[in-house]
Length: 282
Image 1: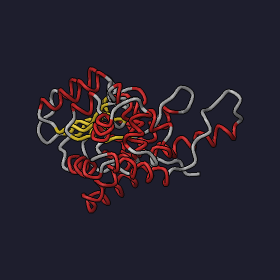
Image 2: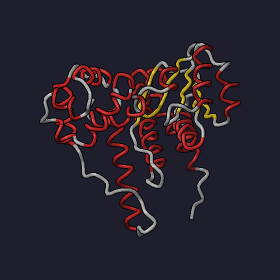
Image 3: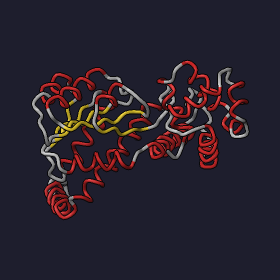
């Protein structure tokens, strides 16, 4: 965990009421918290010291001192904050800059919450898969399709399903040695959760790609990969979360390519050659 503030922000929807009060105070006053005692923070949040300790454990820390240290580290690495969202008054250059900043922030925050061990497990499963199903709907369906394009180029049999009936139809016929990869930023898309559960029951290894924190999809999958991106109306959030998801897919593709390097080079050369033949020469 390299950015505890990002972790707290992403887990906010899953906190208990007491934890939510603590999280809100920390996110609004991170610098102040680094100077407080546990008793002072408890008083500021109108809660107890025991609740502070439980909160620390909920976010994966041993105790209050580690929380303060992690907050200080996050503050030290924190980049310039965005000046609000996009408004109807923004000119073209302002929109360009804000979109770029949102996307950069989404990638930086995602790198902060990615777990190297889970990434390694996912890459191993994908590299050895007999077949891969990528499941996603709406914007996440675009990410699923992008993943299929990448892994198809290195000769790994895979399909991207955006139709929910086809997701279930394929999932139920998977078996041991296959991989089902569910993509949903919220982690609560009912159809994706059902497809992953079905694939798991059929014997396939299951992978999820969701926002950081506990979610139905994360609970259903064997391997969990997380992204971090604030989604908000008219703040380019949906676009930023897609960029974060695509970044994780790129990382996985390279990790798998490393494991199958000799074969991958040949496959990429073959696909590049055949595609180049389709280009129109001036």
